[in-house]
Image 1: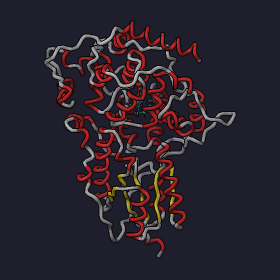
Image 2: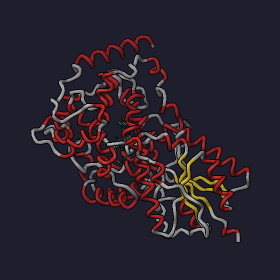
Image 3: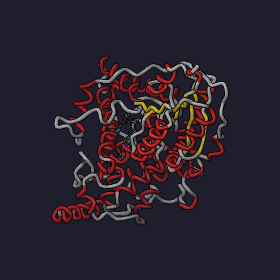
Image 4: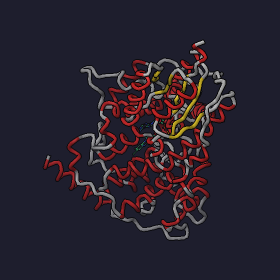
Length: 474
Ligand code: FAD
């Protein structure tokens, strides 16, 4: 009889059926299951592209559930109040969820758990977003890792359990509670013109994510190490960050595929696994030092004379700096919702060093434009480039975008792909940028490409002088 009491499955960034310990446990309970997504303050506050992409993911996941005779119940409001309301409506035994690790989510989930438990209800959280829980690995001294290489050694030596298989059937409740209509939520409202342009670049849902992994392992992983740094090499990296960000694929599934390829002798597979573990490192750092999201991770950097928002930073956002590698990358992000990893490093270095602008402005712009936005990886990436983070590139390492272009885009394929003004007959991708950007930016492919906004050598010297001055005042 007790088994007829439903369980609420509180989905957040975990829109999949496979490699999902919470779902496997819920099915094993034998109870009717009520999948729910709550649009709470944290989800409402997502950047424009991320919120829109979440909407696409929710629509696809709801279709998947519908195909199994299930539903995704959508509710809006404060998470605990919504969940308690649903429990009262349905007589549910309680709630299960996969963990999130950012401080805001941790605070919310902790209070949800305490309140439900105090009512004598089931309130259970599960792993699944990461290969390893951030607190499960520690240095020999019992602290957390601040440098990647020993972290990699420690976690890769442990190995990971195989991913749990996909659930095949979810028992439906006899009566369904009411659900909001996803369209009414207008998840893409802030994207405006950009949504139609960005849409063809998204591969949404678990099926697409698994296909993406298969394609990458079959055709690209063996050249990953050699080609992953070249943004013009289409398909040289997996593209899975978009799906990982919304939990449309589990990291253990990716790790297992990488390990299989490695044992079959694919040259780049170990390197691919190592990159996946950078994501783990970002979560490890965020868990143990959550200030990485908002303040210089190294305290001494708090006093650095970063510039606040400024007209040059706005030109950087518009992809009009006149530095082709930088502009190509900024446009790639605006059109596709993603940016190649090497390009992320170059645009971040240009903003924080040549323009001496606070890394948090760049972090926020990425949060608004990326469909693969991941709070932990984004913060770690920005602080790494700025020099203020753990295991960071030293501040005096200033990427020269022109030199980087010669090295990593020697045939200019990437720059021509994204900058219409550089070609006599620009391609569709380059032109689509002008359809995506707000009209108030007043950009047109017919305009001449701008001259370089700053002299790279002067910008570099200024940044290094400010760094030297800071170093002597420490
Ligand atoms: P692949 O090369 O195929 O790698 C496989 C997976 O490994 C990725 O999907 C990702 O989950 C992980 N990974 C690879 N490189 C890194 C890395 N340097 N740090 C953390 N994880 C990594 N990644 C995000 O997912 N979201 C972000 O918001 C984000 N912001 C970034 C900001 C800056 C300034 C920098 C320098 C990097 C940022 N990254 C971010 C990391 C990295 O650029 C992307 O993960 C990568 O480009 C995704 O492409 P892919 O899926 O083809 O990666």
